[in-house]
Length: 335
Ligand SMILES: O=C(O)CCC(=O)C(=O)O
View 1 (cartoon, protein in one colour):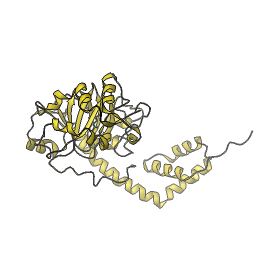
View 2 (cartoon, rainbow, N blue to C red):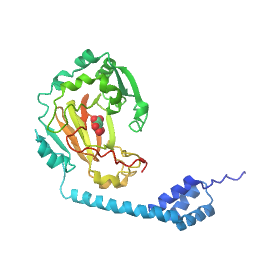
View 3 (cartoon, rainbow, N blue to C red):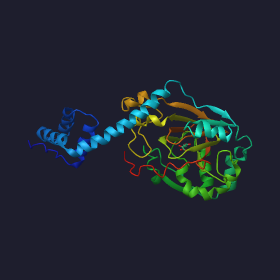
View 4 (cartoon, protein in one colour):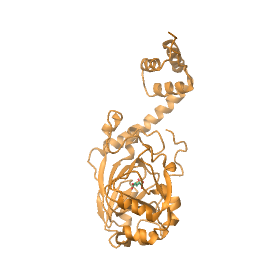
């Protein structure tokens, strides 16, 4: 019988060892994992001893301690939030200055009602109207999402161009599906293709800069935008259909397994506590956004969005107040 080839310890293994030691794993456990992967016991032990002596690792551990201190501060906010159960409040025709004082400035979500009573879009934007007026335009849509669990992360590879009239027909016929959806990721192309639709929206000038425009989201029942957080404050202006929105406060970020950009692998449809045990301690706030309502999504709040009907949403970030949080977002998106 030929000898089983031994696995060599390379820099990928060294990175894994460093990360796990810093996260508090016991060296004995790490040796076990390495041996199971085909690394000789003696080589594994020698490498772990070298890691424990490494001044580089001590430098990284100090950075870890600094992050832990910041997580502690976030944890205080999380504990204080739990002193009173939170629901997203609904406020009828909320004046701009009250919105600024009680929600925008405090990073607190709210559903504003009554501001879209006379909004022409709500009556006009039927399937027939959209296909009739704009059917010949070329639009861009997210496609092939069912075949890719990371469709949002890989959104650039899911873009497809088609006639708007064909897309309207697909949505009309689709039933419940998440396979295609026109989203803000398609805005680069759709902004000019569908520009005149923006004239059917009210200015909402108590909150927004003049002529703001917005991102056009249009899809069948069943579309799912996975948990993520935005890098700006955002309004979701609900024109047609209902959306179920699940929200998580920014202070819970240390428990969201956030390693890539603004995404988490936690699935908002069914949170797997075996795989993500820290989520057991995370309050998830549920609401349903109805047509004619506006949801204020404050920057940093995690949100998962599922369409319960055929939906049209306009989202916008052009608030009258400071909304530049993106320019100092960490450049390296690998956390
Ligand atoms: O409506 C959706 O599907 C998602 C909206 C959203 O996540 C956003 O505007 O940031």
